[in-house]
Image (tube, one colour):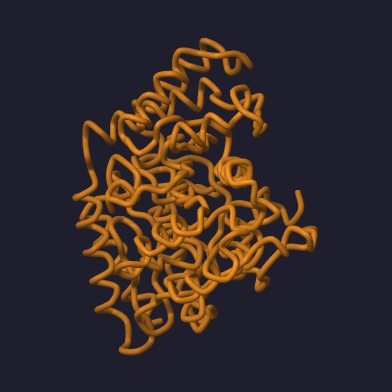
Length: 408
């Protein structure tokens, strides 16, 4: 495997050292190949909101796999899953299942271009929307860790169709849409930026994007692969009362299995084949095992509603970590169950601020925490996750380890 991994964010390029290999997980903990127990605050990069190997989810996967792992034909569970998604997120009239968040954003861009007859896209500096060619321009996540702003192999023609604005900068958005709005097919954004570390939207920013897109006739796409069902049993757009034209989902809605979804207004979604001229297909889309995991996860989230408890733990963790930082050395950003320890001054509102962080300090902190049995995202530019499986005792363990690590 190139680099010994199947996804570059696992390679520890951002923190140095040898990647950890896992053998098992249960609740809030993972067991390494060497048998060490780690308290997990990475959560498979977001999907495991219920923790590892939640009993009901595993049972649903086993039942589905026992009946057949794939059919390449329609199943009743796909219909139930689509209906549940549209019920929990009423801004979605229709959805199309994919096998990854990358496929969802790729499909959303194609839909936007098909709906508008336009070519160009506006995205935000440090925003990561999967490894679609056009969206690897000034991308975040693992690309930031690697110290590059794009990827080899992306044609110049693709990059030329993408404008990039600073996140939270409405003035830049309005300037671009005023001058070139007639060429713009879509504005795509993570409503809460989570691939340059956690950067929350400033008041009015998302509302301003909705207005700017409507004024120039572009579609507004919310990439909620991370934020969808993370702050409540619905989308972040729904929580904020902002209706994008298309929403991309993934991670949590698959319960740890590979799933993505693009959904939105019926008039746009019906442009997809077989009803319309915009082609998209996938042999494993709506895979019965993945759908079973996702259905069970969403039903549990609706029934148990663990969000206020996760937010309380997230606040405790961030407050304790901020108290442990030496003044001016760093701060912990937190929103709901998302958090990022930044080794730089607060607050972070865009990629420009994030880039001032001391990545060597984060790398040292990561390894000191790992020695103490805490697994964090192996990059300054990723978010940490609190799950429904975490407890106050887990946060106590985290904070004791963090205090010792920072002293070290």
